[in-house]
Length: 173
Image (tube, rainbow, N blue to C red; front, side, top):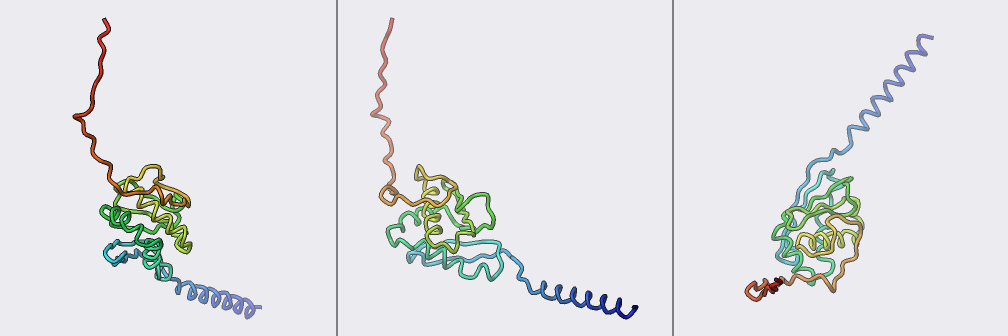
């Protein structure tokens, strides 16, 4: 009886040691950072995220590929956006669906869940850059939105000439 108890305890102890050893091989998430250069030949941006090395592998390349996906037509928009944006942060489990940023913001936040969906990632980056640039009508946080390529322009509105404003008053006595 005593031997049977000892064998059971040793068996359980051995199983616990094996489970502990298996758990020690898990990768730990750390702060990751990489600077993507040569976007459209001359742009650069830093990409950050809190991920394991395995999760992080290929993320900077996916971001660069998504930015350049529609070719040189988007270079002016990203060039203008990267004047204020210096970081694209990859976020796990955010409160938004695909991206989050603000007008003239320094960071574009991208949901890590869309990294393997090339179209969603491309659209999120294009819309986020439009928000940073102040293009009206694009929400600062959003689900997948198809960009309106024919209406997104980077032309700066001309300054108003206030000398031509006329004020009309009537004298009602």
